[in-house]
Length: 457
Image (tube, rainbow, N blue to C red; front, side):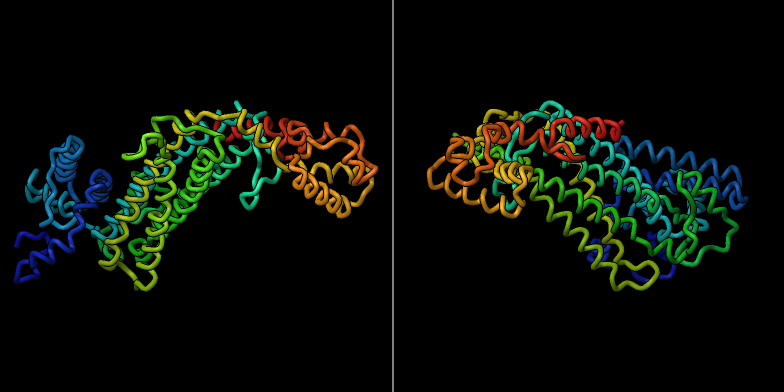
């Protein structure tokens, strides 16, 4: 039998079964992590006098040789050997002889694969944190340039109140900051070490699990061997965080698409991030934000897939759990691609401040400020609200905006109006007046930018 586990079997594996059950076409992504874990394991076996120094040295040299070949693309993995663990072990035995078979002493593929995924996800979590910060920097840079650029703020996709464009962009900064915090916090769970749990029950060999955990940079070993090989919470958590993050990316993408349309004309994306039409030569399509928006369902699907996979599984390892990796790999690839595109797309975006200014002077988004104006003069806000509703209706019927009305027209609705009403209705004044903490007032946006920079530093 050519299988490393073949001693108990009398027939070769059916070719269809071999192809169907093999995971090497996707779990080869874990090759370097598998070797990293194996080196820590064999060093521990030596330190605990389970293997002698000569055996440890030969195994480590063989693993280092395979590691270099993997990095250089000089290794061909085989479906016949099922997964990355058996492939690496087979290559090791070919490299150094039968002593390579001693590497698996005191461990199982069950704790081995779990360790590999912890190592992989830790590395990718740090990488994603850096990419998120790249997007945040682009948002802060644009916000700093456009503190006093004013655009309509929307509720129900109806113009509500004017806001600083910088303030609007910074809302996404804080969304991504929470994503980043969630990623950082997830490292507490990722940094548990399964190695040494073996198949499910531990091992009779006198191993030192703390030594391997320390060597691999983990905080501590899993306290329970069954939990160690069964746990996929750390992947579920990653997929959950990723689902929230891609939601934020999708919402930002949707606004970029709207803002770039002929109907809005608030921004223009750089040509490098758009494509054209095969039939309509005038088109400039926002394909990148559309795809970013579209990737949302993909990541949601991976989360739901793993939740469904795990919900009925008994302890400990089951072959079903082979399905835990592809969704994780694809989510990492999807987020890395999305964040890598989003940062330069935001940085190169042209902001059409003039078009935004026109929009806030040709609407009724300053109506609330008239109500506040009357309330300050003593009219109860509810009554002021009714007065302003009538003024807006009157303006619509007359095809005018609030700044177009004369003082005499205002006085028809309330004697409390004075000439200073027009200053209050100026969009710049409307925005600047909202100086409460976290508000869109220019002074508050400046403070917020400084706070954002502190978080990045």
